[in-house]
Structures are given as structure tokens and as C-alpha cells.
Length: 230
Length: 219
Image (cartoon, rainbow over all chains, first blue to last red):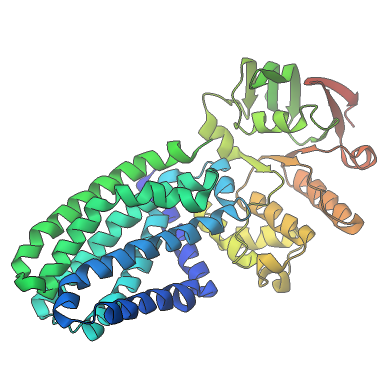
């Protein structure tokens, strides 16, 4: 199996997923407004600038994590609605291509989502980010999304076949993704300057996110096929 | 096994749990045949098709599809087989045309091949631009069959392809299957409808209690 074939399949799967998402508008019309409301409610509940600025990174990533559950469930619900993922499997389509395509589409959606949440945090929580902080923030968002997506795609594929898929995915995903949550939150704290953190202190956490992302992606590429096959 | 054999199953035993869903079944299917597998519910029709698609392990015996062992060369078997069960395997939020294009991209088919497959299955521009979720059951089946053509599957395994279709839709599917055979595919259909089987098949076989019994000669 050639690398170019896997890349071609991944590109087709990612384009298909993004087209379906764009057409359904579930992300823009339902998920994003929900997350925005959560951010606003936090602003009301913690009506104190000092506290809000300290907890803003954690709130952004917790909101991202919970939203990723919805996005992943959506991503695999379209696969299972008419057993399309079974058709791919039964046709002998390389699972690596399917997995990488799902991950790519998830990363794009999560990065868009995090961008909106970060902007909301800047406005609602009065967080200041300079240019160096912005670079750190963007890198954190991309690598954090990669880590979450790489794990979520594996568990999403597993949960398609399992009973009680709505509850199975959070049970599997949330504990496993904790290291990404910690690393991304720490890096975002540095980008936001929360509690006096400096931007330079965030880059080691970004390195850790890169390692997590690479390990999860490598493991997922190898494991997705055998784990989701009958 | 002759050089033109597409399916060669010998003394195959398939266990579902401890139950022998296929019991020493033997069957040979030649290239270009349109075989209808008949039998009562639970007789083993679907099991036979799933075995040929490389979806079930053999407990005993042997099974080869396109010369590949279904147990050892599963990837090669799956690449040459199109299996259509009760679901169509379509993306309901995409149009029929987008589903076909997606499969074209996945298998590396040219645009002309995709258009040719759509034309052969009677999918006109209006149907191709319609979201699959809004198509009728028959139109969805035709889209799924067009995908098999895009995939260049040489052996089509169809489990009750007429289920849920009206009389016109069933006739349409039959015509498409005959066209597929004329275009070089080998088709195996599992069905419990005796009358339709007689008119469709070039050969009929019957599965009784997991054993295969020839019930209609080659035409």
C-alpha cells in the first residue's frame, strides 16, 4: 500500500467530513452558540476580573474538550447512519487513510472552534495577548487539537460498534485525553499571561503537546484498523 | 477449481458460536454467472455471502475468491468483492453524485468512470444532485450499485437487494444486475423470492440447513 494512496484517501475522507459538517451547520448553529453561552455564563458566575483571567485558559480547554465529544460523535454518526464506515471496511479501503482523514477534519473543526473561544475569552475575560503570546496560542491550539483528535478518532471508531455509544465515548476519551488538557491549559496560561506567567514558560508545554500528538497519531494510525474491524 | 472460477468453496464449515451456520458447503461459481442463492430464513444464505466477502472465518474446509484464500488474503478478497447487505453504505447528507465522487477519489477512479457507472445505473443529473437522505429506497440501491461499479468490483454479493422495493423498483434492480453481468461482473444474490429468482438467475442454488443444494441448472 503506497503512501500516496493513503494520503489520497485521507484527503477524500477529510473533504467529505468537512462538506457534511458545512452543509449540516450543526457546528455553527448549535455547538458554537452553546459554547459561547457557557463562556458568558462563566463570566457572570465568576464576576471578578482577577479570577476570570486566572481560570480563562482552563475554561477554554474544558469547553473545547466537551465540545470535541459532540464533534466526534457527529463525525462517526454520519458514518454509522447507513453503515458507510462498514462499506469502507468491507471494500478493503486502507484504514490508515480513513483514520488520518477523520483526524484532519476533526483538527480543522476544533481549531475553528478554539479560535472563537479564544476571541470570546479575550473580550469577556479581558485577557491580553501580545504577538509572542498569539504565536504560542495558535501553536497550542493546533497541537492540542491534534492530540484530542488523534485519540478521539480511535475511540469514536470503537464507539460506533459499541452499545450505548453516547456514553461510551466520554468514558473512554476524557481520562485518556487528560495529559493534552493539562499541557494545553498550561501553554495557554502562558499565552494569556495568567497569574504572571511568561510566554517563554509555555513552549515546553507545547513540546509536550507535540510529543502527545505524534504518539497518539502514530498509535491511532496503527490501531484504528484492527480495533474497528469485526 | 477452473481458471474461470470466481468462487470456490469446498467442504466449508462456518460456526456462529457453536452453531454450524454452514455445514460442509461446497460451491463453485464461474465468471459471468448470475447466481441466486435461495433458502428459508436462517438457512445460511447470508453466512455464505459473508464468507465469500471475507467477513467470517472458516472452522474447516477451504474458500477461495478470485483465487485468494478468504482467510489469509482477506484484503485482496475485499478489494475485488462488492458486498451489499441490508444497509446501502451511503452518506445520507451528501448527494448521490457526491457519494459516487467520494468513492471515485477513494479508489482512484477517473471522473469518466464515475459518470459511466452513474449512467449505467440510471442515475440522471436530477438524482445525482439530490441528497441521498431524500432518495427513495430503490434510488438508494441504485446509488449503492453504482458505487460497486465505481469500485470495479468483480464479484457482487447482494443480500436481499429487493427488500423494501416496490415491483417497479425490483424489476429495475434485476435489469441493472443483468447489465452488470453483461459488463463483466459476477453476481450472487441471496433471496427467498422463488419467482423472482427463476426469472433473474442464470443458476439457482438452495441452502438448506447450512448445506448447498443445486436447484436450477446453468443456462
